[in-house]
Image 1 (spheres, rainbow, N blue to C red):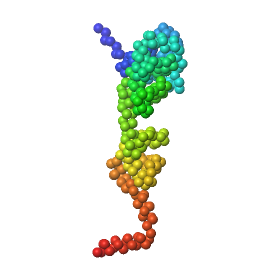
Image 2 (image 1 turned 90 degrees about the vertical axis):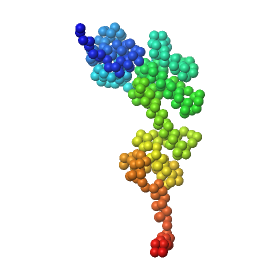
Image 3 (image 1 turned 120 degrees about the horizontal axis):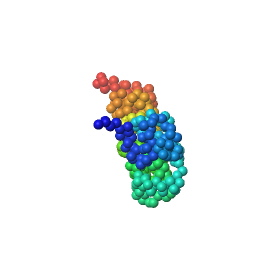
Image 4 (image 1 turned 30 degrees about the vertical axis):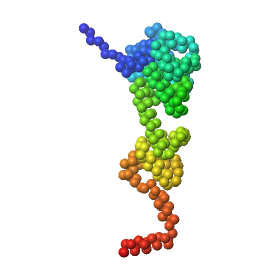
Length: 307
Protein backbone atom coordinates (compact mmCIF):
# COMPACT_ATOMS: atom_id res chain seq x y z
CA UNK A 1 0.00 0.00 0.00
CA UNK A 2 1.40 3.39 -1.01
CA UNK A 3 2.21 5.64 1.88
CA UNK A 4 0.13 8.86 1.68
CA UNK A 5 1.95 12.10 1.18
CA UNK A 6 2.25 14.48 4.07
CA UNK A 7 -0.35 17.24 4.24
CA UNK A 8 1.05 20.20 2.30
CA UNK A 9 -1.09 22.73 4.19
CA UNK A 10 0.03 23.64 7.73
CA UNK A 11 -2.76 23.32 10.27
CA UNK A 12 -2.67 27.04 11.06
CA UNK A 13 -3.10 27.92 7.40
CA UNK A 14 -5.90 25.39 7.00
CA UNK A 15 -7.79 26.92 9.92
CA UNK A 16 -7.47 30.42 8.46
CA UNK A 17 -8.57 29.26 5.00
CA UNK A 18 -11.64 27.52 6.39
CA UNK A 19 -12.53 30.57 8.48
CA UNK A 20 -12.19 32.88 5.44
CA UNK A 21 -15.04 31.09 3.60
CA UNK A 22 -13.49 31.91 0.23
CA UNK A 23 -13.10 29.00 -2.17
CA UNK A 24 -10.96 30.94 -4.66
CA UNK A 25 -8.44 31.83 -1.95
CA UNK A 26 -8.23 28.24 -0.71
CA UNK A 27 -7.90 26.89 -4.25
CA UNK A 28 -5.14 29.35 -5.11
CA UNK A 29 -3.27 28.57 -1.89
CA UNK A 30 -3.24 24.86 -2.79
CA UNK A 31 -2.12 25.75 -6.32
CA UNK A 32 0.76 27.86 -4.96
CA UNK A 33 1.87 25.05 -2.65
CA UNK A 34 2.02 22.75 -5.68
CA UNK A 35 3.46 25.09 -8.30
CA UNK A 36 5.67 27.63 -6.60
CA UNK A 37 5.88 31.19 -7.93
CA UNK A 38 2.67 33.05 -8.63
CA UNK A 39 1.63 33.26 -12.29
CA UNK A 40 -1.83 34.80 -12.64
CA UNK A 41 -2.39 33.67 -16.23
CA UNK A 42 -1.38 30.09 -15.61
CA UNK A 43 -3.34 29.90 -12.36
CA UNK A 44 -6.44 31.27 -14.09
CA UNK A 45 -6.19 28.64 -16.84
CA UNK A 46 -5.55 25.69 -14.57
CA UNK A 47 -8.11 26.69 -11.92
CA UNK A 48 -10.78 27.70 -14.46
CA UNK A 49 -11.06 31.21 -13.06
CA UNK A 50 -10.83 34.64 -14.63
CA UNK A 51 -7.65 36.67 -14.22
CA UNK A 52 -9.59 39.18 -12.13
CA UNK A 53 -10.76 36.44 -9.75
CA UNK A 54 -7.23 35.06 -9.42
CA UNK A 55 -5.69 38.47 -8.77
CA UNK A 56 -8.35 39.28 -6.18
CA UNK A 57 -7.74 35.95 -4.45
CA UNK A 58 -3.99 36.52 -4.52
CA UNK A 59 -4.31 39.98 -2.93
CA UNK A 60 -6.49 38.55 -0.18
CA UNK A 61 -4.06 35.70 0.34
CA UNK A 62 -1.20 38.18 0.74
CA UNK A 63 -3.12 40.12 3.37
CA UNK A 64 -3.91 36.94 5.30
CA UNK A 65 -0.16 36.23 5.74
CA UNK A 66 -0.70 32.50 6.02
CA UNK A 67 2.06 30.35 7.51
CA UNK A 68 3.75 27.68 5.46
CA UNK A 69 4.71 27.27 1.83
CA UNK A 70 2.83 30.31 0.57
CA UNK A 71 5.19 32.70 2.35
CA UNK A 72 8.04 31.60 0.11
CA UNK A 73 6.12 32.86 -2.93
CA UNK A 74 4.86 36.19 -1.62
CA UNK A 75 7.71 38.69 -1.69
CA UNK A 76 5.71 41.92 -1.61
CA UNK A 77 3.10 41.95 1.13
CA UNK A 78 0.20 44.18 0.22
CA UNK A 79 -0.59 46.62 3.05
CA UNK A 80 -4.21 47.61 3.65
CA UNK A 81 -5.30 50.57 1.56
CA UNK A 82 -6.37 53.83 3.16
CA UNK A 83 -9.94 53.06 2.16
CA UNK A 84 -11.80 49.87 1.45
CA UNK A 85 -12.64 49.03 -2.16
CA UNK A 86 -15.93 50.37 -3.50
CA UNK A 87 -18.27 47.38 -3.58
CA UNK A 88 -21.56 47.39 -5.46
CA UNK A 89 -24.91 46.42 -4.02
CA UNK A 90 -24.82 43.40 -6.34
CA UNK A 91 -21.53 42.25 -4.77
CA UNK A 92 -23.12 42.38 -1.33
CA UNK A 93 -26.32 40.59 -2.35
CA UNK A 94 -24.43 37.85 -4.17
CA UNK A 95 -22.13 37.09 -1.25
CA UNK A 96 -24.96 37.35 1.29
CA UNK A 97 -26.88 34.68 -0.58
CA UNK A 98 -24.02 32.23 -1.06
CA UNK A 99 -21.57 32.95 1.76
CA UNK A 100 -22.71 31.66 5.14
CA UNK A 101 -19.79 33.33 6.89
CA UNK A 102 -20.68 36.81 5.68
CA UNK A 103 -24.37 36.23 6.41
CA UNK A 104 -23.45 35.35 10.00
CA UNK A 105 -21.34 38.51 10.28
CA UNK A 106 -24.24 40.67 9.08
CA UNK A 107 -26.65 39.08 11.56
CA UNK A 108 -24.22 39.53 14.46
CA UNK A 109 -23.52 43.17 13.53
CA UNK A 110 -27.23 43.97 13.40
CA UNK A 111 -27.81 42.23 16.73
CA UNK A 112 -24.95 44.05 18.47
CA UNK A 113 -25.82 47.45 16.99
CA UNK A 114 -29.55 46.98 17.52
CA UNK A 115 -30.56 48.09 14.03
CA UNK A 116 -30.72 47.04 10.42
CA UNK A 117 -27.57 47.91 8.49
CA UNK A 118 -27.76 50.46 5.69
CA UNK A 119 -26.29 49.79 2.26
CA UNK A 120 -23.29 51.91 3.20
CA UNK A 121 -22.85 49.92 6.42
CA UNK A 122 -23.04 46.64 4.53
CA UNK A 123 -20.36 47.76 2.09
CA UNK A 124 -18.00 48.64 4.94
CA UNK A 125 -18.72 45.38 6.75
CA UNK A 126 -18.17 43.41 3.56
CA UNK A 127 -14.85 45.21 3.03
CA UNK A 128 -13.72 44.21 6.53
CA UNK A 129 -14.72 40.62 5.76
CA UNK A 130 -13.51 40.41 2.17
CA UNK A 131 -10.69 42.94 1.72
CA UNK A 132 -9.14 42.89 5.20
CA UNK A 133 -9.75 39.12 5.29
CA UNK A 134 -10.73 38.96 8.95
CA UNK A 135 -12.45 35.66 9.82
CA UNK A 136 -16.08 35.83 11.02
CA UNK A 137 -15.30 34.93 14.64
CA UNK A 138 -12.66 37.68 14.79
CA UNK A 139 -15.16 40.19 13.35
CA UNK A 140 -17.67 39.13 16.04
CA UNK A 141 -15.08 39.99 18.70
CA UNK A 142 -14.16 43.21 16.92
CA UNK A 143 -17.76 44.43 16.94
CA UNK A 144 -18.29 43.44 20.59
CA UNK A 145 -15.05 45.20 21.55
CA UNK A 146 -16.08 48.42 19.77
CA UNK A 147 -19.52 48.35 21.40
CA UNK A 148 -18.07 47.92 24.91
CA UNK A 149 -15.42 50.59 24.25
CA UNK A 150 -18.04 53.16 23.25
CA UNK A 151 -20.27 52.34 26.21
CA UNK A 152 -17.37 52.85 28.60
CA UNK A 153 -16.17 56.03 26.93
CA UNK A 154 -19.49 57.76 26.26
CA UNK A 155 -21.94 56.02 28.55
CA UNK A 156 -24.59 53.29 28.16
CA UNK A 157 -26.58 53.42 24.96
CA UNK A 158 -23.87 55.03 22.83
CA UNK A 159 -22.99 52.75 19.93
CA UNK A 160 -20.15 52.90 17.39
CA UNK A 161 -20.81 53.64 13.75
CA UNK A 162 -19.65 51.22 11.09
CA UNK A 163 -16.90 53.73 10.28
CA UNK A 164 -15.66 53.45 13.87
CA UNK A 165 -15.61 49.67 13.52
CA UNK A 166 -13.79 49.95 10.18
CA UNK A 167 -11.10 52.13 11.75
CA UNK A 168 -10.57 49.62 14.55
CA UNK A 169 -10.49 46.78 12.00
CA UNK A 170 -7.59 48.48 10.19
CA UNK A 171 -5.84 48.88 13.52
CA UNK A 172 -6.21 45.16 14.25
CA UNK A 173 -4.89 44.17 10.82
CA UNK A 174 -1.89 46.49 11.19
CA UNK A 175 -1.21 44.95 14.61
CA UNK A 176 -1.56 41.49 13.01
CA UNK A 177 -4.56 40.55 15.13
CA UNK A 178 -5.90 37.98 12.71
CA UNK A 179 -7.07 35.02 14.79
CA UNK A 180 -9.52 34.44 17.63
CA UNK A 181 -6.67 33.76 20.05
CA UNK A 182 -4.81 36.94 19.08
CA UNK A 183 -7.99 39.00 19.40
CA UNK A 184 -8.75 37.57 22.84
CA UNK A 185 -5.20 38.26 24.05
CA UNK A 186 -5.28 41.81 22.67
CA UNK A 187 -8.62 42.63 24.33
CA UNK A 188 -7.32 41.34 27.67
CA UNK A 189 -4.17 43.48 27.35
CA UNK A 190 -6.18 46.58 26.51
CA UNK A 191 -8.54 45.98 29.46
CA UNK A 192 -5.57 45.55 31.81
CA UNK A 193 -3.95 48.77 30.59
CA UNK A 194 -7.24 50.65 30.81
CA UNK A 195 -7.55 49.48 34.42
CA UNK A 196 -4.03 50.72 35.18
CA UNK A 197 -4.73 54.11 33.60
CA UNK A 198 -7.93 54.49 35.63
CA UNK A 199 -6.01 53.59 38.79
CA UNK A 200 -3.37 56.24 38.02
CA UNK A 201 -6.03 58.85 37.24
CA UNK A 202 -7.74 58.28 40.58
CA UNK A 203 -4.45 58.32 42.51
CA UNK A 204 -3.45 61.60 40.83
CA UNK A 205 -6.77 63.21 41.69
CA UNK A 206 -8.17 63.32 38.16
CA UNK A 207 -11.91 62.73 38.52
CA UNK A 208 -15.00 63.38 36.45
CA UNK A 209 -13.24 63.85 33.13
CA UNK A 210 -11.25 61.98 30.52
CA UNK A 211 -7.53 62.49 30.13
CA UNK A 212 -6.55 65.11 27.61
CA UNK A 213 -4.68 63.82 24.53
CA UNK A 214 -1.39 65.14 25.97
CA UNK A 215 -2.01 63.53 29.37
CA UNK A 216 -2.91 60.26 27.66
CA UNK A 217 0.30 60.33 25.60
CA UNK A 218 2.42 60.86 28.70
CA UNK A 219 0.85 57.95 30.59
CA UNK A 220 0.95 55.67 27.55
CA UNK A 221 4.64 56.42 27.03
CA UNK A 222 5.42 55.61 30.70
CA UNK A 223 3.56 52.32 30.52
CA UNK A 224 5.31 51.48 27.24
CA UNK A 225 8.67 52.14 28.92
CA UNK A 226 7.81 49.42 31.44
CA UNK A 227 7.08 51.44 34.59
CA UNK A 228 4.76 49.88 37.14
CA UNK A 229 2.04 52.04 38.69
CA UNK A 230 3.89 52.39 42.01
CA UNK A 231 6.92 53.89 40.28
CA UNK A 232 4.76 56.36 38.35
CA UNK A 233 3.03 57.42 41.56
CA UNK A 234 6.38 57.98 43.30
CA UNK A 235 7.30 60.31 40.43
CA UNK A 236 3.91 61.99 40.86
CA UNK A 237 4.54 62.45 44.60
CA UNK A 238 7.95 64.01 43.97
CA UNK A 239 6.48 66.29 41.32
CA UNK A 240 3.67 67.63 43.50
CA UNK A 241 5.89 67.93 46.57
CA UNK A 242 8.60 69.85 44.71
CA UNK A 243 6.39 72.04 42.48
CA UNK A 244 3.09 72.20 44.40
CA UNK A 245 1.27 71.07 41.25
CA UNK A 246 0.91 68.20 38.81
CA UNK A 247 3.35 69.33 36.13
CA UNK A 248 3.42 66.63 33.47
CA UNK A 249 6.68 67.74 31.83
CA UNK A 250 8.45 67.80 35.22
CA UNK A 251 7.10 64.36 36.08
CA UNK A 252 8.15 63.10 32.66
CA UNK A 253 11.75 64.23 33.26
CA UNK A 254 11.86 62.22 36.48
CA UNK A 255 10.59 59.09 34.75
CA UNK A 256 12.87 59.55 31.73
CA UNK A 257 15.89 59.82 34.03
CA UNK A 258 14.87 56.57 35.73
CA UNK A 259 14.26 54.88 32.38
CA UNK A 260 17.77 55.79 31.23
CA UNK A 261 19.13 54.15 34.40
CA UNK A 262 16.98 51.05 33.96
CA UNK A 263 14.82 51.89 36.98
CA UNK A 264 11.14 50.96 36.50
CA UNK A 265 9.74 49.62 39.79
CA UNK A 266 9.22 50.81 43.36
CA UNK A 267 11.88 48.41 44.68
CA UNK A 268 14.43 49.61 42.08
CA UNK A 269 13.77 53.22 43.08
CA UNK A 270 14.30 52.33 46.75
CA UNK A 271 17.59 50.62 45.92
CA UNK A 272 19.03 53.06 43.40
CA UNK A 273 17.27 56.41 43.80
CA UNK A 274 16.00 56.73 47.36
CA UNK A 275 16.26 60.54 47.47
CA UNK A 276 13.37 61.90 49.51
CA UNK A 277 10.53 63.41 47.52
CA UNK A 278 11.02 66.69 49.36
CA UNK A 279 14.76 67.03 48.64
CA UNK A 280 14.34 70.04 46.41
CA UNK A 281 12.11 71.79 48.93
CA UNK A 282 14.66 71.06 51.67
CA UNK A 283 17.46 72.46 49.53
CA UNK A 284 15.47 75.61 48.85
CA UNK A 285 14.77 75.98 52.55
CA UNK A 286 18.45 75.60 53.46
CA UNK A 287 19.50 78.20 50.90
CA UNK A 288 17.08 80.72 52.40
CA UNK A 289 18.45 80.43 55.96
CA UNK A 290 20.60 83.43 56.95
CA UNK A 291 24.14 83.18 58.29
CA UNK A 292 22.99 84.55 61.65
CA UNK A 293 20.33 81.86 61.87
CA UNK A 294 22.90 79.21 61.10
CA UNK A 295 25.17 80.52 63.86
CA UNK A 296 22.28 80.48 66.30
CA UNK A 297 21.37 76.89 65.35
CA UNK A 298 25.01 75.78 65.72
CA UNK A 299 25.15 77.42 69.16
CA UNK A 300 22.05 75.57 70.28
CA UNK A 301 23.44 72.32 68.88
CA UNK A 302 26.74 72.77 70.77
CA UNK A 303 24.95 73.47 74.05
CA UNK A 304 22.80 70.37 73.67
CA UNK A 305 25.80 68.31 72.69
CA UNK A 306 27.94 69.44 75.64
CA UNK A 307 25.02 69.70 78.05
